[in-house]
Each structure stands twice: as structure tokens, then as C-alpha cells.
Image (tube, rainbow, N blue to C red; front, side, top):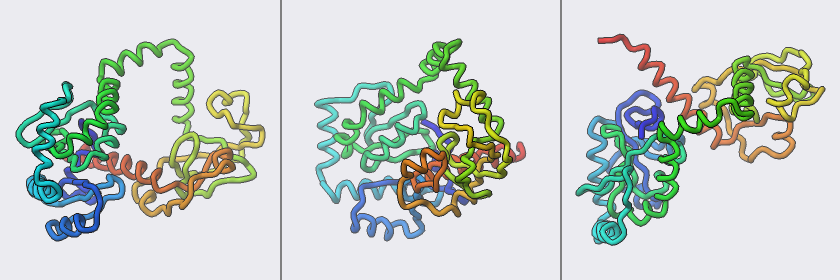
Length: 295
């Protein structure tokens, strides 16, 4: 399951390494920091980033010690549980070190696996590793993981795209795409967002308003795309925020209220910023890779 934001070969500064997540408790974190003094916590990934080309092997050794510390028989219990009630799936393989999971990419799958203790993404094999000791947790999440994996197979995605052709759903999607390419958004003339700062919007996620044109929105022409638009809305221009802008944006401490949602924009929450930063980092990494000269 490959995604540029989750290959974990580099952190935001381009350093090589790997990430690891584990159930939190103070003593475990203390032992981890003693073993990996250069490790840094990543809010976007909800995991620790360990720099170094040998980080994967060192993390695996530490995970094995921690598993034995918590329950010296946890590994064998997991093996026995798998033998008694195995997960039979083309997305899961088993070997002497535990389970290897490889699926089509889905953010939902990533979120599910993040909840499995000691699950680790390994970029070298483009798969997730889960130790035997975490088998019971993996089994609890497996139904969602497998259903989402099947749904994201290329053939299934193609079938859904074919089924949408010529439908009202497809026409609406085309209208939304065309409107997005215009990089404009209706804004309430009585409550305008700040210019030049990232804000969350109902229509386009986190964006930066670059200009308020003052042109009145013709509701009859865009009501199918912007359902909340009124005759009091005017057009604004927008662009995508840079990673630097997203990092410097202070998150809202509360979720947007009804009034903020109805007006169409609000101060981004920490969860919204995390996802936007993740995507921005992936975009920047892809741009750097594309710009590298061929050998």
C-alpha cells in the first residue's frame, strides 16, 4: 500500500528514516527516547520518526523487546490465535516475524492500521508489518481493512467510474470540477474571511483567499454547486496554501459552529491542518523528485 505521504522514507526536512507508533504510556516513551534520542514526534503521522538508514532494523529489535517486556508469551499467544482462527485474505501474508499487509492505498486503511499496536509501515517492501502479539487487535480491525482494500482495487474503481457515466452524479461532478478550476468561491458580503491567510471552507477545504472581487454571484447559475449561496454573496479568488503557511497557521481550539459552517469558512482545526500538511508535504516531495536531474 503505497502513498507518498506515508512511505516514511523521509521526514519533512528530507531526512532518511522510518516511523513507528505504539500504545502510549510514560515508561514506554521513556525507554523509547533512551534508545532513540534523535527520534521526533510527528503530529501529521501520529508516530515517531527515527532518522537513519538502519532505523527499520533498530525499530524492529526495540519492538521485539517491548513486546516481550509487556507479556513474554504475547508472541506465542498471537501465533496460537492465528492458527486457531486465521485471517484468510490475499492482502495478508504470514512469516516467522509476524504479518505483512499489502493493499491498494486508502487513507481509511492507514487510519485503521494506526490503531493496531506496533503496526509499522516498511517502505522497503511497501507493506505494513504487524507482530504476532498484535493479532487480536488486527483481527478486530480486519473487516474494515479488507472491505476498503477491495473497494480500492483498480478494477472496482473503474467499474464505479463506468457506472457513473452519463448519470446526474457524473454531470454534477463535472460541474464541481469545472467550478473548482475557476478558483473562485462565493463569500458573504457581510462576513468576509481574512485575505492571505489559510481558512477552512465548506467547498474546498483549506484555502487562501487572494482577492474579493465584489462581483455579485448569480445564484441561478451556480446554485447546483453552491447550495447555500444567496443574492448577498460576492465572488472571491483563492489559491492552495503552501506547506509553510499551513505550518504557521494557528489551529482553532474548537470545532466550527453552525454560524461558521453556514457562512462557509472558519479557522482550521488541528485535524484539518494535519491532513492538509500531510498532503502538502507529499506534493512537495513529488515536486522535488520530478525536478531531480536524470542520471
